[in-house]
Length: 216
Image 1 (cartoon, helix red, strand yellow):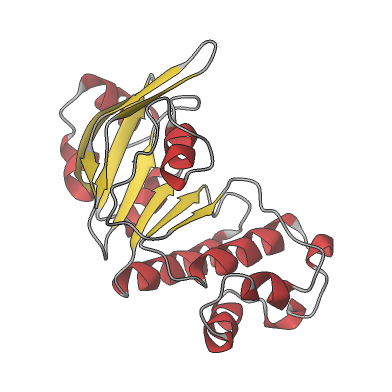
Image 2: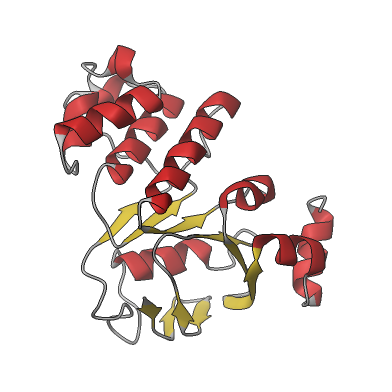
């Protein structure tokens, strides 16, 4: 699946993204400093905001899913929130169990804690059938147990033939679940490599400096 080269300009920032190919069944993790353009890249792919150059996703991609950093609960039960995208009720129930939501499935989603809401939002994203699923910091509000359960669900979703692009501040998470890691800095894609290769043998000085600062 092809993501075309594109730009996205704001008053004091410009994202310049080069052409990238992504494969079904794989997880791609974007890392980089705050403000480097990761979330902007995610939004442009998902169509949440328009790139300066128009459509960026190739015609062979029929459906794209997106989970933003902010979890948006609708004023209905947790299960009904998840059913908004679910391919089947069975799929929704499976995710409810795996993400520890069974005890609150009938609760009004507006009354959830931050961690509960994040798990519900992830379940809602994973319940649908998407060619590409874009997840922007999906585990940021979760504790360790919930994060690990979420990562297993993300890997299972990719394993069933979907492409996942995840934005994460956690190098450990990128290393645990991603097939490839992409490092961004200053509004550009600096380096892309298989996860272990980038973590252990990055080519670009900017990548190495970033990894060294964060303990890799």
